[in-house]
Amino acid sequence: MFLPQNRRPRDQWGRWLVVKRNAIALAEKHGCRVADQPLYMSSVTDPYVPAERTLGLTRGILQALVAYQPRLLVQTRSPLVARDSDVLACFARVRVHMTIPTDCERIRSLFEPKAPPLRARWQALQCLKQAGLPVGICLAPLLPVADVHRFAETIARLDPQVVVVQDFHDAGGKPGADTGDRARHLLRQLHWTRDDYQRTVEILSRSLVLFQGEAGFFPPA
Image (cartoon, rainbow, N blue to C red; front, side, top):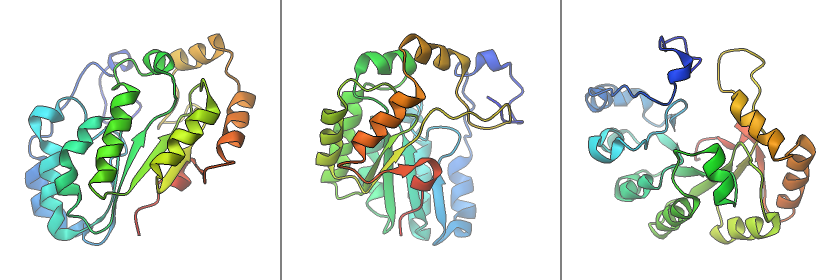
């Protein structure tokens, strides 16, 4: 909502969608620019928003880029990514990151009311793994966790290539990713503090190799 291109009121964030209907044509035209280069999909908008189910823009872009073989990192909260396993498998260097910031559906519904249920995300990761695709799990931002030991075991069983952890981000009033006031208020209501975050990370790190924040979003080699 803080991007300079956004001229809508900030309180409307999440209530509108701009469809770049020429995206596939542009990918076909300019795909050569990302040949063998790192490509992050995507940094601002989830590439698998619900409208993608019918629009197919992300799938079309991926199909257009196969010929150029970028080092592709896909970041999403949506199980819909599993639909494109066949196309993703055509990339020699690819990894799919799924955001699963908690083990508790009640917490998920409080902080991510419009996002897919956690169970569906785990199922999508299993489908991607079965298709032979490398996956990563993003605990970013890490939300309150009900059973951190069981959560760590669940993650470890999936054997992700990357596990990213991050606390709520504070941009210090500057443009860019930030945590909204409502989310911070929810944290206070749940009595989740920085100490709780650090304690949870310490337990997770006993059985998992964790990357902090941006360090975990390196492209596949």
